Amino acid sequence: MSRIVHVNGAYLPESEAMVSVFDRGFLMADGVYEVTSVLDGKLIDFTPHCVRLARSLSELDMQNPHDDADWLEIFRQMVARNDLAEGMVYLQVTRGNPGDRDFAYPGPEVSPTVVLFTQSKPGLADSPAAKVGWRVISIPDLRWDRRDIKTVQLLYPSMGKMAAKKAGVDDSWFVQDGVVTEGTSNNAYIVKGNRIITRPLSHDILHGITRVAVLRFAAEAQMEVEERAFSIAEAQNADEAFITSASAFVMPVVEVDGKAVGAGKPGPLVARLREIYLDEMRRAAI
Ligand code: PMP
Image (cartoon, rainbow, N blue to C red):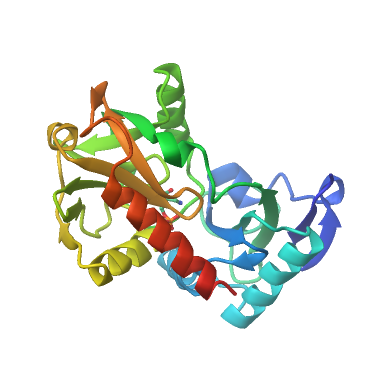
């Protein structure tokens, strides 16, 4: 089925949607993005994605082409026009098309390029992977130092995903200075007893929208939360481990660098956290 995509205000069949070869997103990876999940035809945790988008744009001195109310209307149009029940809405804003290639940014006369498309994923919330858990390997974190900005510079995370694929596992965890930063496209956590341990926010990691919600729900469920970095050895000796992202939600991690975490299968705390997260998010979806 052909999707309806959004390009700069127009809703078009995907085969008719076009962006210039001079767009700085294409030439320079000069752009930012957001991925918002949809369950039961409704947007999950929408407002924080708008807040992070505005921050990413502002950190890069880019204009925000819409206010939050306009974004909501555009997202809702995308869900409706694509009859999306379960899946994701992808949004990308680039610095636009200056008509030539130049390292210097263009002036304010060049408008940002806005692209949205949907990805239908029936069964997203009932993922079989969540029942068996992910296996991960570790690789050095060779990304730039502003990982808090959600840019479309995703080559190294793609390389990390390919390294995982080659090793026959599900994902890679990035390691810097002997401790885990995050996964290729998710935040990383370990569990010891009733305590959840995850790296504190800084420029070193993306400030996950799912992370904020999950840590809040964990505290409300009387779980302890400790924000500090952990090593691969510590993860291998933890009781449970998991990752969070807007599209994987809360996903158990059962093996790190070939060593089983805990019993080598999804544990009770992570299963409970996933259930709480999905219940609460469905309830608050808009
Ligand atoms: N870290 C990285 C590097 C990511 O790419 C993502 C997902 N985009 C996350 C963490 C998780 O963020 P969120 O919960 O907002 O999807």
